[in-house]
Structures are given as structure tokens and as C-alpha cells.
Image 1 (cartoon, rainbow, N blue to C red):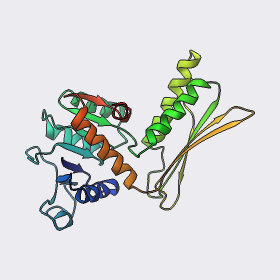
Image 2: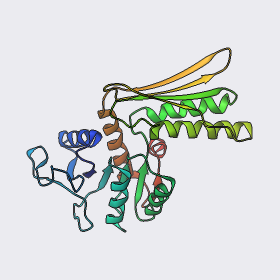
Image 3: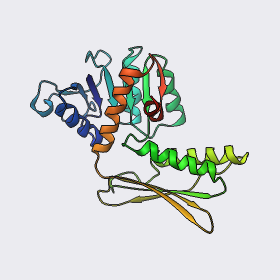
Length: 247
């Protein structure tokens, strides 16, 4: 499978490149970076593929593109791709509602799997939290996250996904609109990622914690999603990580 990486020099993009090069069943077809990157024109790991910026005329012959970049770069790539039917996995977060709608519109041309968190096991963790909220809607929930000190001091896409899902499940179960759980944000040194959901039952408390030890967890999950998208997804449409795990 020939894979292109957008954000190839980033924290997760670097791990993706390493995993692809180490796997004989995968091939790095393109290593795409910001137009201002100092890496442009240099070979990736001494091989034949060079870092280069995305462009409308690119002919990388990718079977799939994995995008861990920025909202602006992600949307620019979609514009460059136009109607090309290349499948895309997107782990970029921070899209506004309007930008997310623009992404959805692009799904008319190609299959796209979009998720705030690709780490192995996270979707099962999320479903466990949603299931508890559905069965115990009266429990007050709180969401917390801890990431490395260089990450923005605002709730991550992962925490927002958890909070929105819990509020939706509680609302459906109770028959009226429940408020979203508050999100506590913590930043500590080089912490990769810790996500926590607490349910207060007054006389008892349930705590669900998901901890990522290395950035490779996100890269491994994105590669698995890419393999599913190429092999099993319909021609076009928007898919979630849950879709890939149900197949």
C-alpha cells in the first residue's frame, strides 16, 4: 500500500514515516510538509522520497493519504485534490464548524475517515464512557486531559469529543438537553496523553482513564484506519473510527 503523509515532519507524522519505512508491506509515496519547511528537497531517511509541499499538480500515486497537520493545511490539501478519489485519513483537530462542513463536502469525491484520536483502544474507552452515561444519565460527569507542556492550553479535540458524546447520551436518556461536562486542562512536561472521565454518583464515583505511553500509538491506529479505508470503505463518504472497528 502506497501512503502519503501530510504533516510528515510533525510529532505524529514523523512516527508514521518511521512505521511505514520499517514495514515491508507499506511504501512511503509522499512526505508532504509546510511550504516554508527547511526540509523541502531533502531525502526522507536517505531514501528516494523527498520532503515536498503539497501542490495541485502533485502526482504521488498514493493509495491513501494520512493527514496530521493543521486545519488550514488540511483544507488546502482538499482543495488541491479537487475531485481526485484518493482516500484520506484525517487526525488533524481544531476545525471550526464551518471548516468541518467543508471537509464533509469533500467526502462526495472520496472516502474520508476523520477522528480526534486514533490511538489504539481509545474508541473502546470512549464507547465505555458513552455507555455509562447512557445507563446512568443522572451521574454528573467531568472530563479531564493531560498533555505535554507545548500543547495549547485549551481543550483538545479528544476532550471535546468525549464531552459532546456524554452530553448527547445523557440528553437522549433523560429526554431533555443536558449540559456538556466541564473539561479540566492540564499540561505537564512531556506527557503524551491522559484522558479521564469521572462520573459522580453522590455516594459513589466511577473513574475511566485512558493513558497513551508513546506517540507511536496514534500512528499505529492511523495506519490501521488507512488500511481499512482502502480495503473496505465504500467509494465515497465520511467515516469515523467506530466505523472501521465495526467492520
